[in-house]
Length: 358
Ligand SMILES: Nc1ncnc2c1ncn2[C@@H]1O[C@H](COP(=O)(O)OP(=O)(O)OP(=O)(O)O)[C@@H](O)[C@H]1O
Ligand SMILES: [Mg+2]
Image 1: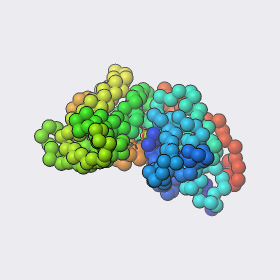
Image 2: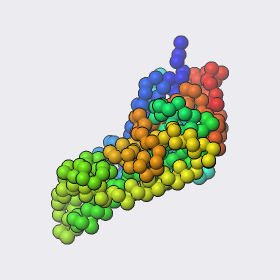
Image 3: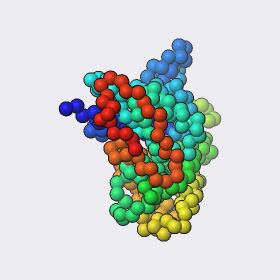
Image 4: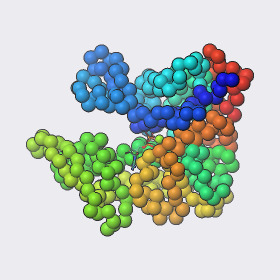
């Protein structure tokens, strides 16, 4: 018999990485959310990592980042990217359209909400549900180990830190701040410009962060260092710069403090009825930027909550979105989890066998 549910598709539309999960096959794509466009013809030439490579080769190609702060800033290009991923990762014999759950930031404007909906339908979704990232990340981050019904999750991505309190089976409050791993890269660029008079690319700053960045306590990891290349501001020539772990630690301190402040505000939104439970359930960090060494310990100290980095932190939101396709989206909470308009059935999709996304 056909296993129709194996087309169920979960998507995390990240500002830097689009992740896609197909039921029965796991996470099938972790693609940079970029497209390469020809400056002369305006045509889209490549997507994802091939777009990045192409843009590095020639000035004729401009790189478009269609998803900003977790929402489509360029709706047509977002749709193009999503449609391409859906087509690539659904085997050709599947002529029907998938049921889809998309993880979105908890604080989307109605216009952004519609843009995501429209991109997903145009990409081929037959039925669609949008879920707030903290709720998805909570479902995808593995058991907190406490058996508690209350959970607080902070998903730290590239541009967004999205904090949500999950109780009564839904998201009861959330706070979204425009801070994430990319702010750490910007801080490193600014530091190197000021202290070394060298201009670094964002990618070089990120590479240094990934190599030796941490929020380790003073005195630890001081000897580790990374070499990056940038442009000397005085001569305009390429120049290598050696950055120590301590230097990066110092450079990113301000951005880390802003992240911690955002998480504090998110926790502060919790009602007194459940704040006691939060003490026992603790805080779960997800998102790729949560993997910065020492960040969990610092956040734990600053908030007084037992803090852990969730399993598969980077994929947590897409894995949780996939869980909702399997078991249904929780209806509790105050997030406007509304059912998007029903899609139309095409091809061999058996409508009556399809579980509604409730
Ligand atoms: N091991 C790591 N340590 C520290 N930072 C990391 C690590 N791996 C990835 N990052 C950072 O995580 C960020 C990307 O996170 P993620 O993939 O969750 O973002 P996104 O979902 O694309 O963006 P957003 O959720 O903000 O829309 C980047 O800034 C990257 O440098
Ligand atoms: Mg994300």
